[in-house]
Image (tube, rainbow, N blue to C red; front, top):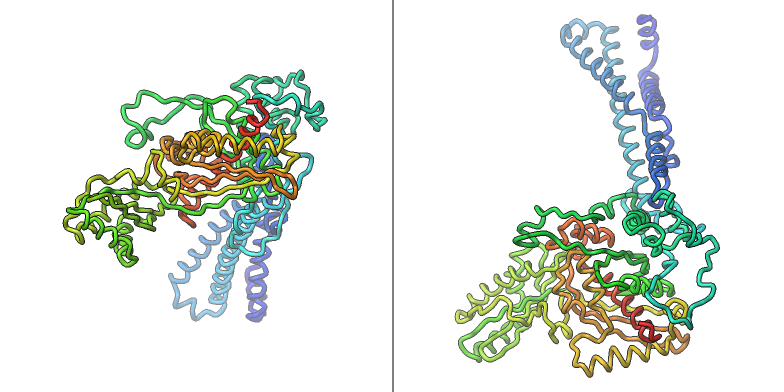
Length: 616
C-alpha cells in the first residue's frame, strides 16, 4: 500500500503535490473548527445584563457550543510533532544513505512538508479565531449606543464592525425613572390617574413567594414600584432585590456583562481593617455603617448616569431622585462643562523686608520665572503640572498660591510635595526667604473663603437644564413662576442678607456630602466643594424653566485616600470612573465632578419645588 502511494506521489508534479497538501490541511482545519468557523453570525449578540440565573446559564451554554474543537487539535498536535521529530531523528541516523536514495528522500520531504503545512495551517486558524473573538468583543462595546424601547425593555441594535480598533464608548440613555418617591405631595397637584401603566400589580398582591429574580424583573417591567419593595417584602430582602435591579441597569449603562459592579459594596457589616491601617484611620475600634441609596437615571451630557448617595437623612435620596427624573424628562437633560481644573496650595514665606516681599511678587509674575518654578514642581511628580503661581503680599509676608493639575488624584499630597520643591528653588534665588508654613490658608482648604469662590479650586463646573413647564407641574408639583420667585427671594436675596459666602443655594452641601461619603472623598472638603449659586429663569418663548448651578471649587479624586476602600471603590465603579484613566489622566476625576454638579442641581430643583409649593 505504501509503495502504491509512493509511486502515485512520484507521478505528481510539484505544483499538484503542494496544492493537494494545502487543500488537505485547510479541509482538516475547517472540520476541526466546527460551527465556530462560520464567522461572527453564531457569536452571541450584545445584550443587556440579566438578573436571572437561567439567562446566565443559557449564555454560557451557547458560548460553549460555539467553541472550536480545540481538544482534537491538542491530540493531533502531539501526534504530528512526534512524527516530525521521529522522522528527523531517523534521517539523521543514516543521512548519507537516504540522501542518495531518491525514493526514500522523497518520502522524507513529503512527510516534512505535510507536517510544516499542518503547523502553518494550525497557527493560521488560531489567529483567525482570535481575530473573530476580538471583532465580537468590539461589537459588544459598540452596539450599546443603538437602543430602542420595546415593552419597557432596552434592546440594543447591532452594527457592522469595520475595523479591529476599539470604537469610543457609546453613550447610553435610559428613560426617566417611572416613579419618583417624595415625602409629601400637594393635594392640588395629585392626579386621580397617577399611573398610566395598566400592568401594575396591586399593592394587595402578595409577591413574597416569588424568587428575588422574579421580583426584580417585575420592577424592571414597571409592574412593581422600586420604592415600595420594603413595604411589600422586608427591608433586608428589599436591598437584595434592589441590587439585582441596579446590576441590570448598570450593565446596560456601561455596556458590560460584568456582575461585579456592586460586589464590593457590602449589604451586611464588613470592613477589611488591613486596608484601613496606615491609610485611612489610626487607633481603629470599629466603623460606622451608612446606608447607600442609588439615584438615576439622570441624563448628563447625552448619557444616563446612576450615582450613589450615603446619608442618614430621610427623603434626601427620594427628593434627589425626583429632581433627576424631571431633568431627564427634558429634551437634552443636564449639560455640564468643566471650565477650570487645578488644586491649590499656598505656602506662606517671610522676607527680610516689605520691599523684598514686593520684589518676590514681581519676580513671580514674569512668564520665564514661572517656567523655572514649573520645572522644579514637576520634578516631584509624574502627573502633576504647575499651571499658575499667584503671589499676595502682606507686609513682609508673601502667600504663593500655586495652582496644579493633579490628574485623577484630588491632589493635596501631590501639590504639597511640589510646593516644597518650589520653595527650595526660590531660596536659592532669594537667600532671605524663610518658609513660615507650607499652607498659609490662602489655598484655601476646608474653610469658607472668597478666593475659592472667585478663582476656583479643584474642578470648576457649570451645569444647566431646561425643564418643560408640564414636567414642572406633573413631576415637581409646582409652577415655573413660583419656582423662579422662590429661588430669587430665598437663594439670592436671602443669602445676600445673611452675608453668605458661596452659599447662594438651597442645600448643595447635602448632595455633595452624600456623594463624597459614598465615593471615598474627604467629607471635610464639602465646605468649599459645596460653593454653589443656583439660578432659575422662565424661558420667554415657551414658559419652560431654565435652571443652572455654578460650582467653582469641587475637590474630588478617583485615586488615593478613601477611594482605595472596597465599598467606596464599588461606588466609583457605579459611576464608571474607578481609579485613574491611563489614556487620559484626569478624565475620571473630571467625570466625578460633573456628576456631583448635576446631582446637586437635581437636589436643588426638587427641594425648591417643595418650598415653592409649601409642601416641605
